[in-house]
Length: 468
Image 1 (cartoon, rainbow, N blue to C red):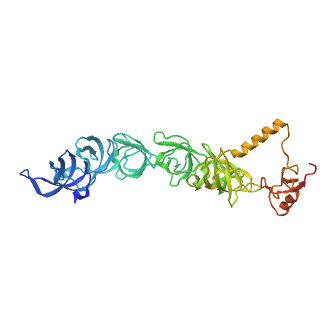
Image 2: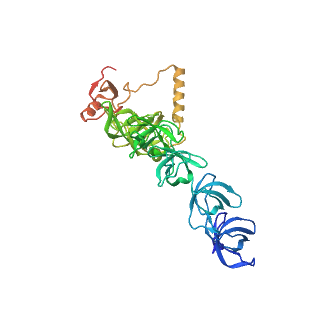
């Protein structure tokens, strides 16, 4: 029952109600109508036979359908209309002329007849916007101001919307102002949030007449929308100004995301794509760190897909976070297949981060190489307060006594491997070298095929430091 459902009625609702009979009394039967307005005790209902009555709210037996549309002047609507004395069973296409008090709306239908009908008779609203893909009739006599309506509709894209008309560019690249009621169907509403620099799959002009292509190509949006069009640079660097409705899908990726992209090869674009990490972006180009260690600036249109949305999987980083990340392999600094635990030292620009791994090796890696944050620490200090205090006291004491700072018993720091001998082994790799291990440990590393414990470069040779 209506009372048990505790439904909230509003103007436009379809209801079943008793009505006043010929004697002004409550009818035994009920009829279907549309709720126009109501006061504290009464409701005005327009019944489908054309009669409008003020009846007691208690006479409303049931709500048959809730009306929840939001109308505005200029909206294209599908609405019932008055024929004879009653409401038609079918709907017709019309344009909202004005909204009236008392739950009514004025509509101009396709035959140019204007009717005032209950707003609840409106079944569907089609609010057109630039960029919408529509199926519409067109003018068949060359587009003169009073051209005849075509017998069939054609696909097009909305460029601009006016009070009574809509500017449509049809797929054969013919622009026409047509009545809104000539738009019989909206195939795809415009919902994309584009901006200058966005990459998207876009249809393009083909042939001498500039008609819309069947296929799409990737392009970069170079301008803000103007009169329903944007300027686009496609992969082959050709510039075109195309309707918004020709943009099909955005490629949404940003700094730190993992992507699949073409790369520069032999002065041109590679025929295959490879995985890479986004470092930075500009209007036309994207800076990529490919997994094989190559670092290139390529056209945004060369990025074929996003394979990992980094920002949705990894929370924002802070210095001191313990992370699980890939690292640079020795040699060409390729991305490692395995991961290691490390501590974030510094957040750097251009999509990079400095991480100290478990073996105390610090590397600057792409932010997108971090797979997850293992633990987050808050309230950390730059150093332990007790150590700072003791170190400060010892330093002040040495200054007062005029004594030099203490020196380890072996005269140098310990070997980072055995912690027993002094680091008299020099590991040479290319044009650089590091001294952090004793000669014996350095030789063992070289014979075992190990890498430099400081930078993980491949060891070319080992030398022994003589003297101090």
